[in-house]
Amino acid sequence: MNDTGSATSRVGRVRERVHTALERRVGIDARALAAFRLVLGSLLLFDVLHRSQYLETFYTDGGVLPRSLLVEQYAPGKYSIHALSGEPWLQVVLFGCAAVSATALLVGYRTRVAAVCSVVLLFSVHFRNPFVLNGADRLLRELLLLAVFLPLGNRWAIDALDDSDGYSALERDAESAARSGSDARITTPATAAILVHVVVMFVNNAVLKATGDTWHSGEALGYALRLDHLTILLGDVVVNYPPVLTVGTYVWTGLVTGAPLLLLLAGRLRIAYVSAFIAAVTGLALSMAVGLFPVILAGAFLLFLPPRVWDTLEYVSNIAVDRVGVLERGRAAIRGAAGRLGRSSTGRSVLSLSLSPATRRRARQCWSLVLVCVLAIVVLWSGMLLGEATAIEPVDSTVPDDYQWTMFAPDPSTSYGWYVVTGHVDGGEDIDVLRGSTLRTDRPPDASDAFPGFRWRKYLNSLFDSDVRAERFATAMCEHATAQADTPIANVTVTYTEQPIALEGDIPPSETTTVVAQSCLRDQNAELRTTATSK
Image 1 (tube, rainbow, N blue to C red):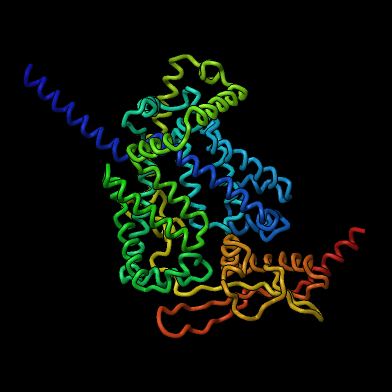
Image 2: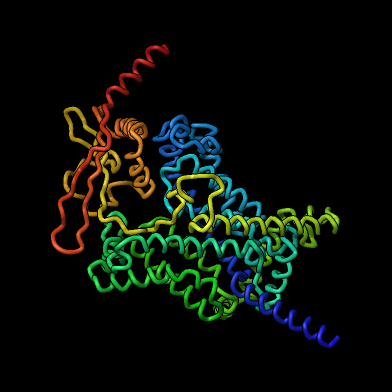
């Protein structure tokens, strides 16, 4: 009996150590999840507002990519809700729904429902025009999809006032511990899945960088920060200090290569490593205009911060803010709003009260099984991404290049360029259609000034892949230029000027290529004939 009891005790201690070790590495603090939710909601709101500036150009039949061309060029486009109509009114409605869902996610109201709606609308708008997307868009939708399975609404949210039964038993136990102030994280297969996904993304990028030449020779940042269409603020200064660029190249390469340490380390060492990553990402945001990418990465890194960081932040904020005078009034206002939104006086949702305990228990068990499946899918995909697992279906390569995390890998580009859309006016002065100004023949002071935004640059880059898409773009620019000019536009020419980069010595000469040239008078004559026929 004594031997049996001793063996049982040893097994129990080992099991407890393993559980603690896993909790410290794949568990996420409830406040980190809340901060991550705030980042996601803010990014989605910004994304909607930014896209709405070019709503008609990129998402309607009257723009550069009508639905007929979309389905021809990108088969998944037929599954987009945004492609149900080519009229602007549908896009306005769907963009508005996306803004409402993002706001609900931001404030933590019906968080899981808001996350699901945001995922559906984000995938839909991405499918409507995939040619304006970059790596940040892909990372955002992947993290948002995984966030659906996380308990994001249990802190700093309206849902935190509700004791609904939407989570698994494991999530609920961890939430209770976190709310009571103990050093317990929320540890579920879903928390492990999102942390593993972030780490694998960097490992994949490190593998690609290892196949290049410039990252391990210290030259990569020298090229990256000379990409004039991307460099901003700090990058314009640092580029003049080659030793700093060399050190920065090796530091970033080391951080990315050592990404598995994000999972292996715990405590202060993890805090230090995550802080180094966040500092590097902040430097990226201040040096290069790469869209939402730095903010998304920073939000993902918040998930790795252990409870002691959030304890410190809460302690500092409690000193800085009059809790009784400010926070309590805010909480009372939120409780009042939650009551007006239909919550019961006990804090439980009407749906949860209508379910029997046995039904709720079965629902939690099913949800736990779903979370295990999510983790299994992420692990399988990670193995495929790193080439350690065979693809589900036979393909030429395990994972297509479109799903590799390049991020300036294997090497940054050794050239940059800018586009000019020239509207030729009969008997008048040519105009720059994109900038809406008189055409300038010299090199722009900043290559990014040649187009309205990074989504324009992505779409213009895609024109080299399809003559049909290039011709449609030229047609849309004809219509746009005619609306701008006082006199008819004879034709439109889209050109790309490529500027090679030299780390030392003289700057090599640039080379200009015509992407597409098209007559606008043909389109105007066709329109006149159509009008006459209809009459």
